[in-house]
Length: 167
Ligand SMILES: [Zn+2]
Image (cartoon, rainbow, N blue to C red):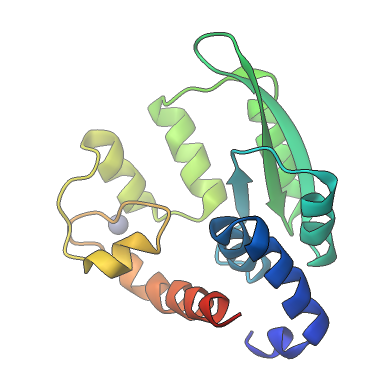
């Protein structure tokens, strides 16, 4: 896992992504390593950004969505797995953004969030948990109160977060 980043070429791609945005590069690393099956970037990404993701071996797709006001937005999704890209596209392309429990469960599945945390969040968003603040901050899901899964995922998140900070 670590070895792949010794490649100078890859490091350059990740550095270039970090110049666009830290979280974008972080998501790309997490997705590249398979910690997250699929990631969604909710801001516009130009061809340069898309090409960098693709050079990391990720498949990308731009997805058109609508917000409540009817305004159109473009999401960028990326994954190593064509089936996940297809699943996201079939379910969400040209649909309004929604926060229904069903949507949150599917998103959680695609984004690699523990199901316990997704279910707890649906019942009560941001319920207090026992994670250290600096640990919660490097995650993209809110850990549930007595989460058994998140502590297993944290070392991989931490390693990639530290790696990216070092670039
Ligand atoms: Zn949990």
